[in-house]
Length: 417
Image (cartoon, rainbow, N blue to C red; front, side):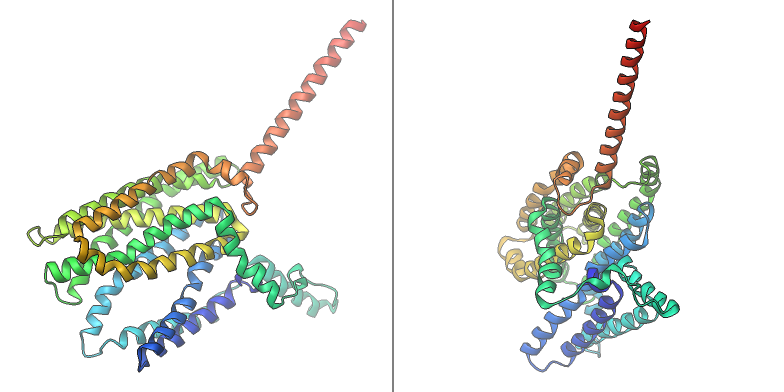
């Protein structure tokens, strides 16, 4: 939708609808109403997650886009980590659980108002539509129009181009599919950890509601360590970008992601084997959050920036597909989390998850070494870096041919003399 109507209107509408359905959750009288409103609240709440990456691609140059996405990603990760202790304190107070839904509704309404008043359109084709309308008004030349205005939308076209496209990109683009599976697994583990932390610090260590959510600060600190590393890495990336004529190479995002995948796996084993018993002080499993937070954040950011750099004008569709899959994993994993941790024990359950995470460690290395080859075969990734290299090779080849011809002509002239 954002590639059809622009970025601004979907954000405004989605934020408002998110607030409306959270009001429905807060006033629900039965579980059916609560579940339906929760579904649509999540549906509309996911829109900014999909659109913001495309907004950054519109607004920022290759040099600073990674930093903008890094700040955005820190908020995405920290939100679910801050929710347990905030929600715990609210629900255990005189306000009750309904205010856990009222407060997000207020935030949604506030966000829609702020976007309505202050957010400008960033999508180029839609900006040109407004500019063409202004020129028609000023010049009275009704033939002036933008290319985007030629697009006639019907339900079939809407379904095929703007709903089917994200799914097509997901299942036909190996990069998007592999990155999405990896990010979805980590996102599922993020929500799985909400249950695991509750069991470790609520049941095993006996912390009260609200207090049992405070150990999440270990992961939050880990996220900000990851943010600091990415900010520290910006000058290195900027120098490489400048040396490459400001043409981004998505694989440059992978080195920090490699470290993040290893750190996250270590964090899972650390948490599992220090949190399964109260004989180990609570601070030890809490500190495992440093690795978990750093790992999940740097992997999340590296993969998200990789998609944005690789797909550019199709970034919104690629990220939408990624967000759909991540949201499904984030919703499904907590459903079996409690039974898994109770049945297997925290130590062995986390060991299983750590082994699965270890299986994904080679993926950033694969993209770093073979990503350019994979992108060269893509139908949606524009690959400006590959095109630039091809032009340089062609120019060198033409220069070599011209030099050969010149040498040949010189030899013929010498023989003629």
